[in-house]
Length: 131
Image 1 (cartoon, rainbow, N blue to C red):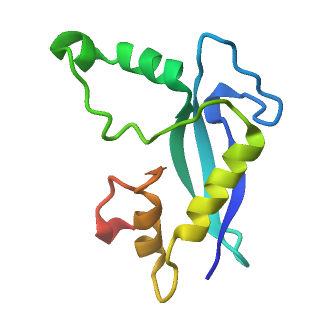
Image 2 (image 1 turned 30 degrees about the horizontal axis):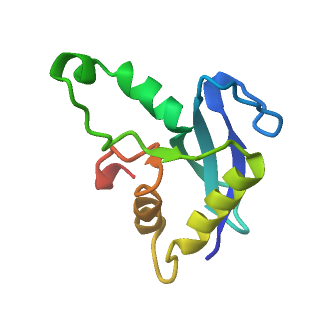
C-alpha cells in the first residue's frame, strides 16, 4: 500500500498555497492534507501549522499559557518551521514524510498513527473502538 496526498489546502484561511507570498512580519498558516492510499478514493484529514521563526514567536506569544505561566510546551502544536515559504518545498516535505511511513502489513489505523507523529489526525482523540 502506498500513501497518496489527495488534496492540500490552507483550510479555513483560504490561501492559494501555490501563489502565497508571506510578508516580512512572519507567517503561520494551517495546512490541511487529505491523505489516502493509491487506488482508493477515501482519505483522512491531517493538519499542521507551517511557519517561519517569526511565525513561531507570534504563535507562542498569543498562547494564553505562555502569557500566564511564562512558558509553553510546543507539544501538540504540530508545527513545521521553514526558513522561507515555498510551495514546492512544502510538497516535497509532505512527500518525504509520506514515503517514510512503513505501510507494509499495516492497518489504516497503524498507518494513521505513524502519520500522527507529524500531523494532527482528525481522529487522533477518538477511541480505537470508534475508528
